[in-house]
Length: 244
Image (cartoon, rainbow, N blue to C red; front, top):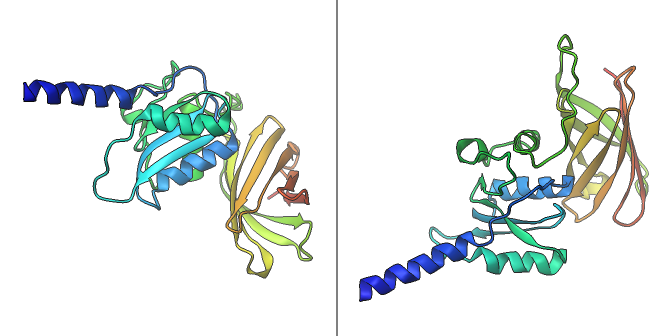
C-alpha cells in the first residue's frame, strides 16, 4: 500500500510539472529574447524553468541556487507570470531546453541551448525553432554575407559627450548585439537589434536600470544604419553605424 501511495504521489507531481507546458504560435519580443539569454547564463544558480506569456512580451523564471531543489509546479509559476502579463503564460523552457510546442520545434538536441551562447546565437536558434522574427533572408545566392564587429557613435540626451559603442552582427540573419559603456561610470549597456529588409528595431538594457529602444533604418547603398528612439525617462537617443 505504501509503495502504491508513493507511485500516486509521484504521478501527481509529474503531471503538475508538465501541466503548464506552452503550445501554439509564439514570437518573442527583443526584450524577451534578452531575458531568455540572461536566464541561460545561470548567474544566480541552475536555470530551472522559464515562463512566457502567449503574446511573447512577459517573462518569468526561477533558478535553483543549491545542488538540489524541490520541484515547483509549472501551473503555480505560470500564474505568477499571468498576474503581470494579464494574459495566459506557459512553460517555455525547462533547464536550457525549449519545451514550447509550436509545430516547428522538434525538441531534443535542436532545442537545447548553452550558457555560453551569445545573444546572436540565441536569436538564430530561436528563429530556427520558429520563436523569433520572420524569414527575411536575402535570396541572392551569390552574395557574400559578412560576420563581424563595427563601432558606432551614440548621442544620448542627458549626456554631454558622444558615447562610443560596438555592434556585433551577422549580415545574413540581419541581427546583432549592441554593447557600450555610459559616461561618468554610469554603467554598461547591452542590447540587440533586428532588421527586416531596410527597417528594424533595437533595444538596450543598462546596469544602472536604464533602458532604451527605438527603430532602425538601413541604407542599402552604403550599408550604414541609423537608429532613433527614447529611454525609459523619455530622453532622446540616436546613433549611427557608419559604412565600412
